[in-house]
Length: 271
Image (tube, rainbow, N blue to C red; front, top):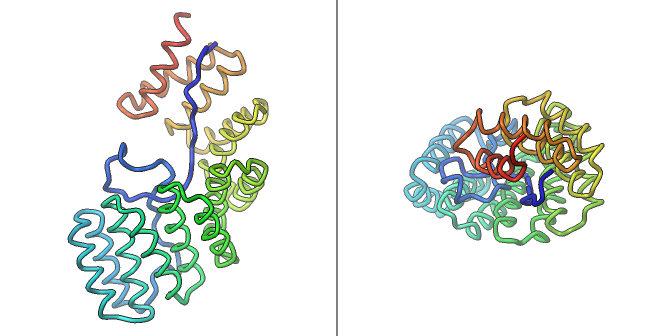
């Protein structure tokens, strides 16, 4: 059995897609805007798509473009510019500016799902700065805005769980994860996060059930394989733990999960 287990804290949120993995907090993950996410007519939709594409490939250029856009527009057009400014700022690692831009986009947006998405993005940028209380406030507002959109409400619940864990409000985090599983039962990440939280609170039987469901939904996800191995090791099932860790190393040897799996295998020792 593992004598020492490096803490595995899996969190949720959005992240700029072009920043190096090592430079981006794990709770930040960029998610595409859902229905209602583009705050204006088709012409504006094309403009925001161009700006967001640029934000992912050349954030400095996109930031300048978005700042100019914001300076010359109002209302829904300005909200779209703030959206792009937030993504560009986040991709540059300026989380404070990103949070401010996303909150401004939210406050000028008229569409509930768009406002909820901007609140989620702001919360992730706030979490990157350790501002969990402010992040939770943004997510509580997003929860109300997301009502009626099941998928969006599910991701909001996942993000609320992240903030609640950061605030050490574990029971509330567990409730938020239960809400997420009910809203988006096919989301493997919801089951993974649930398993991680159950493991951290010592309920290994429940953690095992939850990680099995996550693995059923995403059998090749290295984060799920790694968590499955940790749960098995803590339960004294060393052979199962080895198999999980070995599968992670085989599938993703150069990833952060692969490196952790190698460390755990070394701690387990020879068969």
